[in-house]
Amino acid sequence: MAAGKSAIGQQLALRLGAAFVDTDAVIVAAHGTIAEIFTGRGEIAFRELEARAVARAIEHGQGTNTVISLGGGAVLDSGTQQLLALCTVVYLECDASTVAERIARNSARPLLAGDAMARWKILFATRRPVYERLADLVVDVRVGTVPDIARRLEDALRELAARKMPGGPHNSGDHNSGD
Image (cartoon, rainbow, N blue to C red):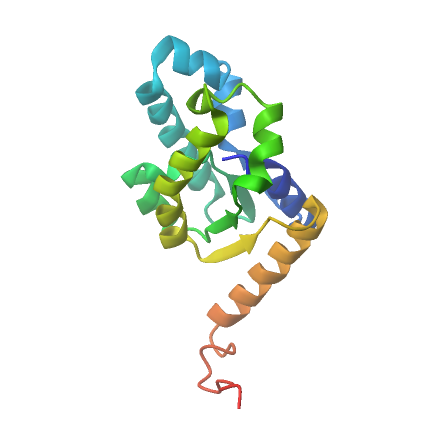
């Protein structure tokens, strides 16, 4: 939440020449703001819309070069977790000091009503183990500009793809032991 998923995802998609889908933007375009959905229909209704938006994005992205940005709580859904097994999942690692300014600028986050940073810390403590478990890659977003982070992420994705390729460094049996 507030790690820069949308901005970094858009920049990465540009670098890769890939399509970009922000599932929160898809939900907002079809149903109104997230705050309005929470107020009018509740969090459970929002999570159902979110799970469907993620499923559609993953389904449409299969076999293509697509960057999909998920809302911070989307990974809590067990069905979404199963679908993410079909994808390369990136966890944008941050901390409270990284997101504090972003959260202060955006008061429209329903789950952060009241003491936003205290609420963020509680949500993050719950979500972080899930992010870490699902991630194929972890990219530190605490330092660097959006273009810098997108470049590092692109490099990390290329390295991951090379390791997964038959005959790639991880699969060839020729491992560098560091000696």
